[in-house]
Each structure stands twice: as structure tokens, then as C-alpha cells.
Length: 487
Ligand SMILES: Cc1ncc(COP(=O)(O)O)c(C=O)c1O
View 1 (tube, helix red, strand yellow):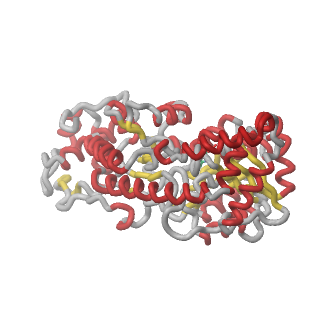
View 2: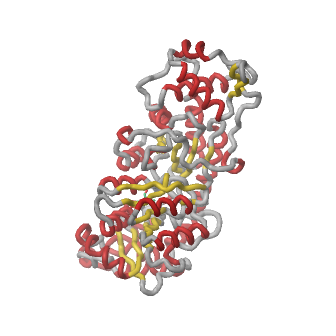
View 3: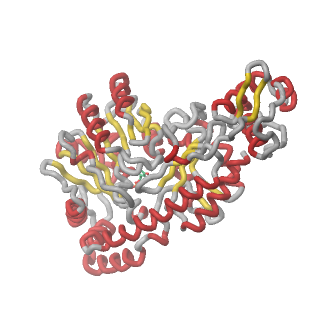
């Protein structure tokens, strides 16, 4: 409780931040009104049982974020006008990386499995994982196609498919991409994957060795970080801003890191939802090419644009020979199919093929044939129209609820596609503490530090907006906002 002057030395957030939140709570609840003079530092230290330096750090944070003002020789006063929730549109720089406070890796635990389990826990309203919920899946169409494919193929449905992929599947994906205006160019090839994650692992295993450095976005998809760590490579973070990966910071990271690969999610980035602009794509491509760094473009959310114009994928820009494009049907169709694809120049594919063969040998013929027919018969196109419309409605509901109910000073991204909102709470808030509190109230989300190679993002959270219908989302986000305001 805000008015209870006790701090928890065992909590993940430091004492000065806990104190800062409690002092801010007194202001928000009207206990200390605008213009009120705050008690002197020794008095505050005595009341909360902390060192004076802790009080001074807490006051400095409140001053920086506009809650109090100090007058030389007279002390600290509650600001005459309290900070308002600006939302993304009215703010200048969006602080994607959140506060510079760090969380230790050990505090985070194993997350991929946990987020998926939480997301499917019936007792939770969870916004923690990015997938299409069953009400938006074309389940009945997939069932009918599966039965038909089993009849048509007979025993052929159950034999090994070609290691590079079932031919009708590869052709159907190639035709789909061409119909979208992004054909596979001459000299390039395509291989089937059991999901995008397998493509990221394949690139990492085939093109780097343990100890190599790998550039990642900061924040970035947590499955990439987990993969890089599990395989003994070293992640080198490069900050993203409102237009995606920052080319200036990339240039300097390329200079000093001797990295072999760059992983990027250029469209509807996980976790921020942002999209790399065309100019930035060209610059990132040129910079990585000049340094001989392979660019792995993870397009897991690429089909999920619901507003604005589409942008060319890296592989379609001039001089993109060093690009590996990874696509997936997990986010656009059904994650349980475990189907994706990888597009690269033939010489790169030749380096990847032996590793893929030892890992997977081949993918199921049945599901590849089902997806091929769904693509060919126009079902996928019709499904995407419906899915994109639903995602936009869900994003609007969540975005509006965050702006309305989260603490003053919160910032939130407004993506044009994909499944995620990135929320940055005012400095001093702890997403880890909020997460613990939220779970006890039946609410789930993914706390920011999961998405950083270096434990940043302590005041950030990723909210997945695809999972629940707008009414459920609005209600749950209002409750989460209420919890955030009182932490
Ligand atoms: C950016 C990104 N890439 C890859 C994946 C993994 O996708 P798949 O299920 O296709 O392996 C995810 C899943 O969340 C993701 O967000």
C-alpha cells in the first residue's frame, strides 16, 4: 500500500525506487497537494527507516519526472502542475529501452515455456505470448482440408517428404509471395522450416561458432536471446527507436564487435511493434554488407499489417546477397502447424542444408500439403483479411485502455501490424513488481527485462493484444493500469 511506510529490502527494485513510488503515490492520492512542501530529508529518512542518501535519490527521480520541484534553501515542493499521461503521439523521443536500471539474468528464469503456459492458463487473463487465439483460427477449414489431403494422398501422406520441403508447399509459398508483389528472385531458393525459430537456429548454427558475437536489437525477441545464450554465442545489443534499428548505433556496434550475424525483426517488431522504415532498411543493408555480416530478417509477423503501406523486405532491395529471410505461418495461420520457410541465395542455402538435415531430416508431408492447398485455393488470403481486421480492433482496444488507465507519464507504442504493444512506465516503476502483483490478481504480461541482452527495461512491459476480444482486453487492462498506479 502506498500509505504504508514500509519498504521491502528483499524486493527486486532498490529501496530508493520503492520510496520514490510511495512518495509519488502520496502526491497522486492527494495526500500532498500541488505546492505542498515535502518534509525535510532527515524526517523522510526517519519515517521510512532508510539512509538520507536513499531519500535524496528518490527525490532526484521525482524531480526528473516532474512530480516535485526544489527551491534553493527552502526544500522540495509538489509541482504546481502534475505530469499527464502523454501517450506516444504527444511525446518527443520514445524511450524504448526504458530506465537504465538493470535486472540480473537470474531473476528472470526460463521464459519461453513459461509465457506459453501462462498464456494458456484458464485462470489468467494473460497478455504474455504472441499467438492467434482459437476464435481467429480457420480451424474448420484446416480440418476439412486435412481429411481431403489424407484421402487424396493415401499412403503417400505418411512417407518422408524431401529434406528441403514438400514441392507443392514450396511452390505454393513462392506463388503466394509473388502474388503479394515479392517474388523469389533468380539465384535465390526456398526451404521449408518447422517454424521461424528453427530458421533462426539454423542460421546461427551454420554461420557462427561458439564464442562468436551476434548483433541483436535492444529490445529484441526473447527466443533469439535464449537461442544465442543456449548455443554459447554472445549477444551484442543495438538500440531500436521509433523507426526500428538505429543505423548510427549499428555502425558503431559493427565497428567494435566483429560480429558475424545480425538478427532483426524489421516489420511489427517483437516486442515493440515498430517497423523499420525503408530508408533505414537500405542503410542497415549497406552497413552489414560492407562489414561482411549476414543479415537474418525474421519476418514472423510480416503478413500482419493492418494499416499503412507495405515495405519491401530486405531480400528484395538491391545488393541483398547477404540476407536470409525467415517466414512463418505460426502468427498468420496456426502456430501448431509448425511450418515456416527460409529464403536465401543458393550458396547460403548450400551452407545451411546439411545442418537442417541432421536436425529435422524432413517435415510432415500432411501439414505441408494442407497449407499448400489453403494458399492455392484462396483460403489464406480470405483468412488474412478477417485476421487483420480483428487484430486492428484488438490493438485499438488495448491502446485506448492503456492510455486511459495507466499511470500518468506512461508511453505506449502504436504498431501498424503484428501483435504487441510496448509500454514504458515512468521511471521508478518496476515491471517485475507489477508482474508479481498482476499474477496474484489473475493478470499476465511479459516484463521488459526479458527482451534485453543486458537486463534493461525494468520499467517496460510487452502486452500482446491478439489474444482476447476487445471487451475482455479493455476490462483487464483497466485492472492492470489500476495495479500499476498503486505499485
Ligand atoms: C519474432 C519472432 N520470431 C520467431 C518466432 C517463433 O516463431 P515460430 O512459431 O514460427 O517458430 C516468434 C514467436 O513468438 C517471434 O515472435
